[in-house]
Image (tube, rainbow, N blue to C red; front, side, top):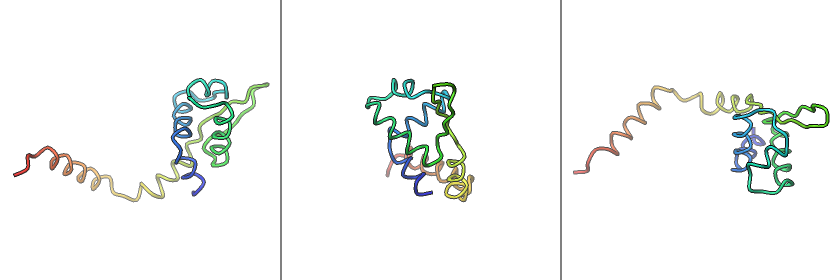
Amino acid sequence: MDIIFKALADASRRQLLDLLLAKNGQTLSELCTHLPISRQAVTKHLELLEAANLVAVVWHGREKLHYLNPVPIGEIYDRWIGKYDRQRLQALAGLKKQLEEDPKP
């Protein structure tokens, strides 16, 4: 899981995942149009996402299409987030909101 957390630690890589979530199956050129970094930097970020199994690649003729693989993120949810009871989190969020809204004495 360390490689997944490393991949998710960078804002540009998270943005690439968001772009693929919005429209799966994009080429490198399509992805580059949305990021203010060089094509080479986008390529390096995609390689790291592929190594973390967060992005899958399919060749369609001469085009290399990138697809989001949500499975590793689901595994993180199951391992780290799913442990916490949703009701308790909602209760804490409600308490926090109430405390922030109440005027102080």
